[in-house]
Amino acid sequence: MNNREACIILNLLSGVGYTRFKSLVDKFGSAQEIFNVSRSELGLASGVGKSLSSKIANWEKFADLKKELDLTEKAGVKLVTIYDDDYPEQLKEIHDPPLCLYVRGELNCQLQNSIAVVGSRRITSYGREMAEFLVSGLTYSDWVIVSGLAYGIDAVAHQTAINSNGVTIAVLGGGLARLHPQDHISLARSIVEKGGAIVSEFPMQMSPTRQTFPMRNRVISGLCSGVLVVEAGVKSGSLITANFALEQGRLVFAVPGKANAPQSRGCNSLIKEGAVLVENVDDIMNEFEFLPNVLKRDIDCEKIKKKSGQRIDDLGLSSEELKILKSIELEEKSVDLISLETEMSIHKVLTLLLKLEMRKIILQLPGKRYKFSINQ
Image (cartoon, rainbow, N blue to C red; front, side):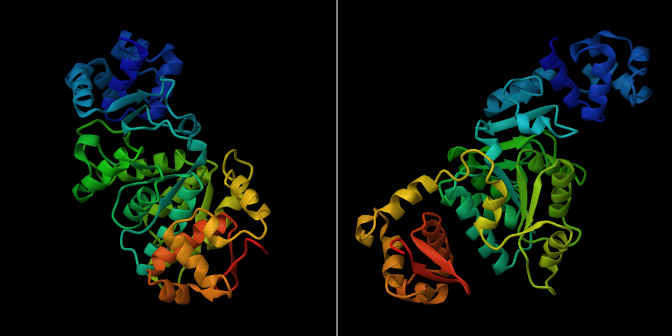
């Protein structure tokens, strides 16, 4: 048995966790050495009682390593341990990182440019609109979107990232062979097909429980540089994720909402406590100016801005983007009026406006009005 196999076995045993794992390794020198000592010796490690000592000493009764490895191989799942080089460095920084990660898809993305987007399962139309608006802008700026594949904001965040040709990662509260909710199997498949990943710290066939979801939330925040909460009640799991983020030294962002709306109370409370208030993508980007690659799109913006006198038709834009620019070429207009004139939905217009704004082709004015700015 090597350290990697020992780590997988310990992850299969309930009651171990990173704190006890570290205590055992500190006591006996390595993960593999844990299985070379007696039950009584195991009990000498801090936090390891008689019950757990007995379970580790007789691990074959509680864990089937060969079966677990066979399951991962048949399912096309990569099992990454804390000993492996491709274990995310950002996740190692938290005080209780998972011993193992089960990964379907690709996790070798730029995790320093990743942000969690979480929120209520019972979203409002406002919450959906803001999630789509913000995630579209973040993915356009090459940010990886991390969420929990749950109903509501999570699903909207994943789907919007996919629709925007971005990368998204879903962290589950159960094993990959027990994907929850089942309604999101198709979404999970799309996440992987588009270059993202489905991730879990739990054994393949472990079903999600009330305890595993909060555990999952620390991994969501741990994989990211920050957490954006779009809508959340005062006792929601999203606030648990935000609290984990604060403990891990990550930034917390929140979208404000109506004072009397249940789905907004959690976000408004976070803002009162110091979370960054978010109305648009710039509110997020401004907090990450020091990170590499975040603002690389500005290079293209400068090229565009230098082309004075350039016609709209020469910018190499899509037909839908051209419709919007021609609508506001001569005068500033509101989103509603642009939507009316272009015969496109408000959501579609907001997504395109954000892309144009980030390229500095248009300018947003107070009152959510927009004007053409390339020659300004």
